[in-house]
Image (cartoon, rainbow, N blue to C red):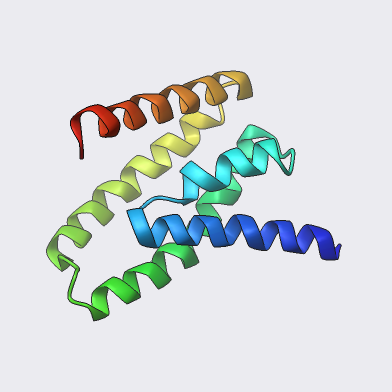
Length: 121
């Protein structure tokens, strides 16, 4: 139990570090770790990651907000659109086989990674 808690805490710390540093972490760090290291199903990993990013994002946002690095109007607009998109995405995800989710997720990581390496942000 103690060993598992340490692994969970390390995965969370990595997600938090990358969230604060690069604005990513939930899906990009937690999902592969939950599937690869903790052997959760792809669907469980997605759901768990989404729940875990709530406190991760909140604490990171607080730090950025106190430093004046927040566009509140944009936050509101992105938030409204995201609420609609996440409901549709979660419903769709439940219909997609785990193997296809893994393949799609891996392809997305590759495309985004290559784009950043070749063309910048």
